[in-house]
Amino acid sequence: EQEAELSGSAALEKATDRCKRLQFLLDLQPKDRQTLIAIAEKLQLAADTFRAVRSESQATQALALREKALSMATLMDPFHQEDAA
Image (tube, rainbow, N blue to C red; front, side, top):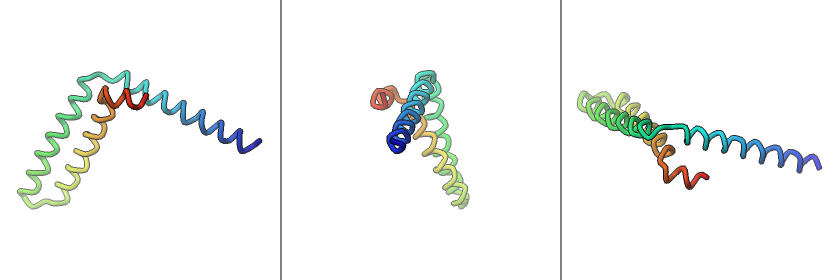
């Protein structure tokens, strides 16, 4: 009985978190997604520049941030939102 209650509680918490995430995605504007993509492009340029001046650690950091921006933009993609629903 206690296990079922814990399982139900965990499922409710997961559903609540999913609803919050979906609402957050619905509240975002398409321009926010485009801004993240533009940021990712600039971070790629920054990484290339850092490589040119032989600063690999800075280039690696710029690329990591670029990947995060692209991941965030992907989450905001309308098609991705439909898959999450």
